[in-house]
Amino acid sequence: MKINDVILRTVVKGVVFIILTLGVYLFFSGHNAPGGGFIGGLVLGSAIVLLYITYDLETIHKKMPFDFKKVAAFGVLLSTGTAIGSIFFDAPFLTQTKGSFTFPIIGEKDLTTVTIFEAGVALTVIGTLVTIILSISEDE
Image (cartoon, rainbow, N blue to C red; front, top):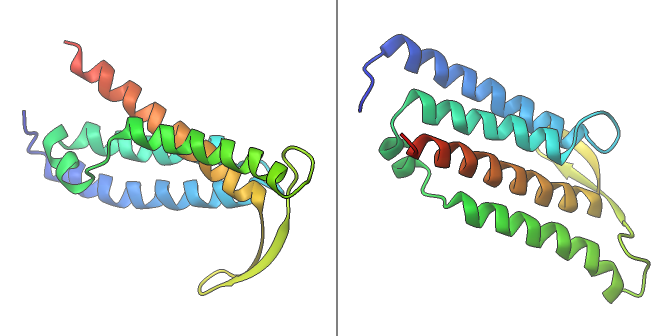
């Protein structure tokens, strides 16, 4: 069923951009302040769910052809890989390393291996959230 609500679709385009920006900010601020992979993943996942609510499933699947079960599985693999990776470098389990990187817009940022772990958590949360919402929406 296609919804023909121009105002809703126009507003959602702007709101989704704001939600995605907030989600990325929460993700990167999570190591030193409240936030991180879990809350960043929830916010990013809510933007995707908002798109699914506003548009029909077929439209979103054309624009975003992801299998969110695989996204969740990749997130678990990424988190587990960073946790186990320290063992290969003869370091204690979940040991982190740190490096400074310069990004074009935001400038210099300290990143750690915890950021990769948090990315895995975020992907797991996004994949799980969207999969649950899509499963619920299929039941009628």
